[in-house]
Length: 349
Ligand code: RBF
Image 1 (tube, rainbow, N blue to C red):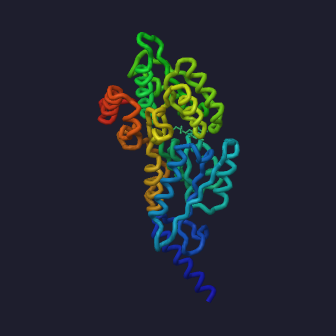
Image 2: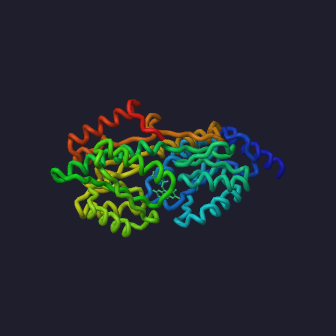
Image 3: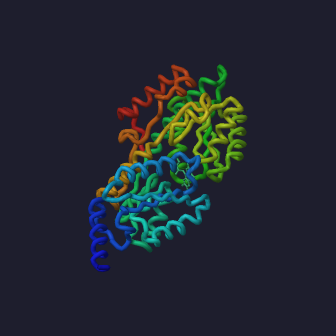
């Protein structure tokens, strides 16, 4: 009796795995027979206030819901890794060592190196990593975004708004960028892309770049932003996670403007946020999780997605954008976007 029960549950397990198409799995790693695959979403930081992480969890959850049904439930566990980056590898190692998750999903440029190191110790563990790049590890699949395009669009709108706000004849136009920390994608892609986009709109525009040193201190971010505004920055792009709200508050108080990154931020402070250069990370997370559950995610490869592929964009269709940005600026921004979307303007990687 006991043995036939065991055989029965093994068969159900195998059926479940087959139904999800994720194939060559070790059935002993499964939970109860009615359970489908288990996915861990590791947030390198905290979710609240970090648009890119909110989108990640949303996309994975949506895929899991869609793929749950009579054949089993896909479970999603979201784990916040906190702001101590030295602890992330240990936390991910523990997730892999538990053997509970068919897939660990995460997002940020530092994750591929961490996952590689964990992968060497737990070679059965598979990873889906967004906002990072690594090819050649047969257990890791990555998606990176063309953030030079995203930053270029942000810089273009920022410079146009700063130019319009500048007093007649004023020579030195300035915009700002507040980053949570310095990292290669920031220093080599986002900052230069922002500057290039700005100078496309106004060749005399300069960028005041400041680094906060963390992804949460809104008070310090507000002080930084206020100082930048006093120094002449009329528009500031914020890429500082939970600290972004400090930048918005300082800009609001001083009558300056903000450009938002990753999600549609016009509603954060209508009239102060004048641009939203976004990533469709929810869409990427959803699609890649679906591919994993269907057994078609090509582990070992690295994809790079931008405007042409439909994962990087600038939001124009928002009443707050239309209300807070003048028609001539919106027209110039529209023309730039058209050039990027059509491929007439190639921004590179
Ligand atoms: N972006 C956030 O919005 N919140 C974070 O907590 C955060 N932490 C990061 C930690 C590291 C080590 C690195 C390299 C990047 C981090 N980012 C964070 C930036 C994120 O990867 C991305 O560049 C920005 O969200 C812009 O798309």
